[in-house]
Amino acid sequence: MAEIRAIFFDIDDTLYSTSEFSQMARENSVDALIHAGVNIPREALLKELSEVIAEFSSNYQEHYDKLLLRIPQETCKDINPAVLIASAVVAYHETKFRHLRPYEDALEAFKLLHSKTNLILGIITAGLAVKQAEKLVRLNLLQYIQNDAIFISDQIGVSKPNIKLFLRALTDLRLKPNEAMYIGDNPVNDIDPANTIGMITVRNRRTGRYTGLEGKTRPNYEIHNFYDLLDLLARDFNIKVQN
Ligand SMILES: [Mg+2]
Image (cartoon, rainbow, N blue to C red):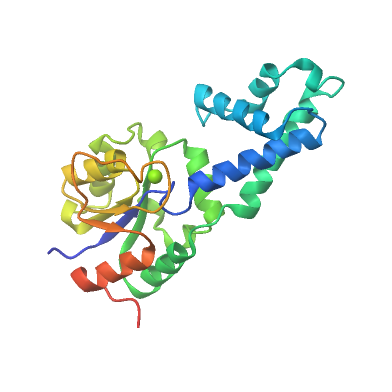
C-alpha cells in the first residue's frame, strides 16, 4: 500500500447533514411566512416550496418569489410581497448561522489529522463557487484545509462525476492517484470516478439521499462516522492520531 499524502472530502452529506439542514431551513422559512401573515397551513406551504425547489433546482435564487406566485392571492393579500420574501430569506439565513455545523466527529478528525500528520486535507465538491465556499466558512473547517486543495466544480468548469475534476486535484498537487484518498456519500458521483482513476475511496454511508444507492464500483472502504476513518487510517495506513 502506497503512503497516503492527501485526503480529499466531499462537502454535502459528508461533512454535515445537508438533508437535515435543508429541511430545517425550509421549515423555518415557511414558519416565517406564516408569522408574517400568509394564511396557509404549514404542511401545504412546505409541500409547495418543495415543488418549487424540485422544479427550479436548489441553486435557483428566487424560490420564495415563485412560491408566492403559486399560492392563492387572498392568502397573503394586503402584505407587501417584498416583506414576505425578506422574512423567508432571513429565516433561511438565520438557520445557516445557527445550525450549519460539521458533524462533531468530522471536526475532531480534521483537528487530529491537521495537528498530528503532514497530510494535505482538501475538498473536491460539485456546486456553485460562492455557495460551496460559504459552507466551508460556516462549517469553520478552513483552518484545517490547505488553501490550494479546494476544488469546486463551478470554478474548474468540470463537474462530478467527470474524472477530470478529480484528476485536476491530483495534477495541481502533484499526487499519484494511490497517494490520495477521496471520501464522499454518493456512489455514482463520488466513488465511481475516484475509483476509475485509482484513488483510495471511502464511502460515507451515514445520511442523505444516496444511502440506498449503489454505483458501478465498490469503495475501498465504508464508514459511518469519522472515527471509522481514523480507525482505518491507523490500521491500514499506519497513520495514528489517537492515543
Ligand atoms: Mg455529497
